[in-house]
Length: 329
Image 1 (cartoon, rainbow, N blue to C red):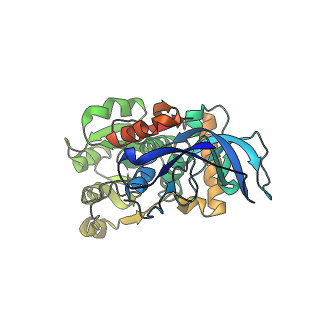
Image 2: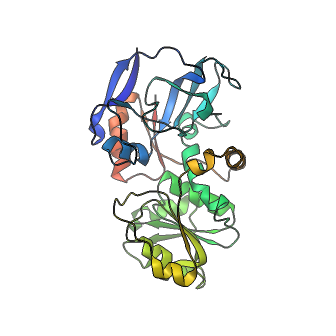
Image 3: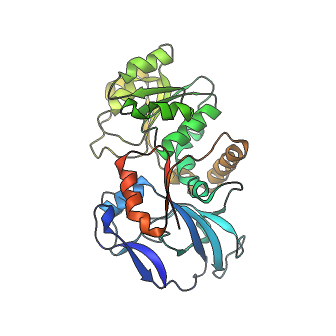
């Protein structure tokens, strides 16, 4: 029997239950891993609460990003061996598998060798954040001197976006609601920080960019504020919406888009990893950034033990963190 987290009802973090469940052997194309650490994501919190586009079939397993060691291989699995340390990428529909557990069975196709030199917490935190933020490189093609607005900048994806922007020679403009996290964001490399509840974003961005506006804005929140983001962009800029944390309708900012020829587009990381040639190019770029030090996962807090999973989720949803929330197992 293996200690495993499941949900039997939808709601707040306290609906997460630790149960002793049988695990068995992996099926063809699968592996069984001993889990070292898991990285928590907002998408998992929304799934647990019933606010995600995919509704859970209860009871449901949960958790789809982390790191562990392979214990057993299913038939037909190649390229991996027992004892390999691997990262589990969130390339599956939530609830199909679940790695918030001491041991877990997952498809071999969603594994990558764990990058060398990373702690378990860091290795559990790499792929969701950098593949998501990679829109700035692959689609916006940011370069030297381009303004890059990063909303919810203290999140793990926000920090990844700041790092990628800095690596590209762009000007990172971190957005946070109040100035409480401004110092931490500057220490993490943000060239500029705007407290959007306290300052006029458009005015600040125009001052930073010499009146041109930013090349792109990267936003996981959505809602009415997209009009402000659009007004802060340069002609032919790109406004990415990669989440819906506001849970409000997100209007199309017609006049800023029309007058400046802006593009407004959705984005999720699967847009890369569902296309093998794009996946390989992004993976190699991210690995190069990790090796060179241009990219480095930032851990807000590491919780110890599966029994801390409720507390860790509550912390994630408190918005106190700067970086990734991790549970080591």
